[in-house]
Length: 455
Image (cartoon, rainbow, N blue to C red; front, side):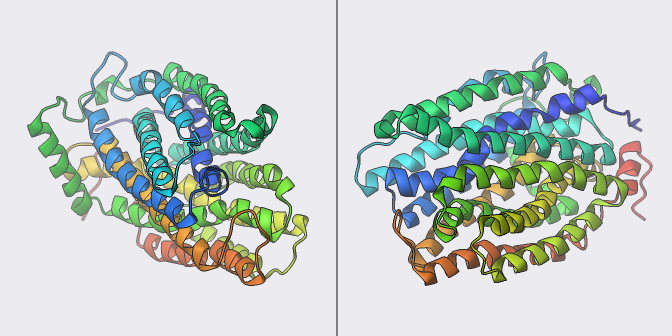
């Protein structure tokens, strides 16, 4: 029987602030790297989308391996915290390399973009999977995890808003005429800003001694086989995790399709490229403001019900956006704000629900497998982003998108359809999947306390 102890505010915020640092990399990868490939590097949009697909599939594989490695790591600082200190400098180096602009033909550009993005994603996972796994260690209270997820998303989108504003400004101030080094320098400067946030997490969290041996240790061939078998067992035994797996695939597809098109929408539909450094961060600021709101709703009612409420708001927001004919930046910003306010709920709820499946897994299989759970879930996100990148690149070609020229009316209509109708389908499918999610707050507490009776 395990007693649930409240987490001190210092530990909660000390952990959550780390996502400010992570989103310096993630939001740049998610929002700015595709336009960088097509409009700066000169890579064909379909090839750029293929880069995202292949790199995301690799990322999903790497996440599961890194999760297993982190579970088996044993140091005097714990299993997960050391990665925040010792692996994070490698992430900054990988970030810089992703923005090199070699003067090569399409084949060479494709290969460089692919390899540099694989390196970036692997380095990112080496730090982020252990970081995420900490959330299941430092708190075992389901409601408290909703607050943690809300604060995490608050800092995440603070970091995202920061980098989407600062990166273009740095590029402009460093001089666009020297693009071969401008983007690398801008990436290096913003990357260095992330490091203190990882150090703060390390300093303000601790891994409970009683959970030190909750997972197997040792690195052998037999251990690798056992980790593979454990992952397969989770796929069959952990029903809540499988549902979240499906939900995050379809909701990430929806959420990211809108975000990745936002730069194109502002540049070509609104015909205001000068507003990109303002509207894109504005959408992230809305995410930032509503993350604590959805966390509070989840604490007061139920995570599953909160997801369904967010579905309703998303459907209304996407329909209003699609059928609006206004090109007024103010009207566009309000519609984008409504979409962003609803969509942030899925990010908050994903990170609030996922740690609960760790204890469910321990109840079903006898071991927690924290890192594996987060690795599998991260694989789901990467799969969604890979599909998203490839699909978006294909769709941009299909609607006749041509970089750096005025777009036709049909292309602009197609752009809005990509931003609204595909995400709308994903939102509806996620609602259908989450309808049968069984892990309530009361059920989770009973599992943690050892009093749960499945009958």
